[in-house]
Length: 180
Image 1 (cartoon, rainbow, N blue to C red):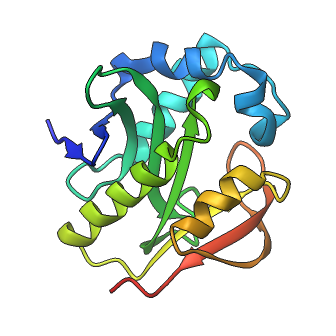
Image 2 (cartoon, rainbow, N blue to C red):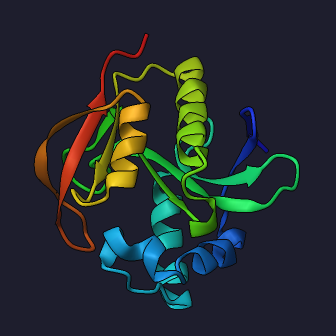
């Protein structure tokens, strides 16, 4: 199994067996506030929507997928990091532009874990495969995630509609193209 280590974290690919970790994380309305207004995710939605979506873009050798973020000394599950080609679920899919996303338990917010995990993934991917751009999408009100994007070196590009089989949504789009 692939493991990526940072100063404080272990990143490992999530598998369908990790569905309960995903479900427990999505039982806090504050965690889901900027995703779908705080709606809790059912176990059925994890099994029937999230797991199949994750499996469709997972390629751990390239760094793509959903990655568990574990605290190194205790192996406590803090949350996850997502990596996939931008516009994966549309005809505009771009394998050279990788979208980063994250979701963490609220008690771990504000401690730099999202930034550290995303940076660890970016560094790993850059060693393994050529990538032109890293990007992230966000609800324009989500100032904490916007802060992570800026710490990663991303800049606001525009507001856009992201096509998705589950429903299109409007987001603020950030990216970083100077990857040296």
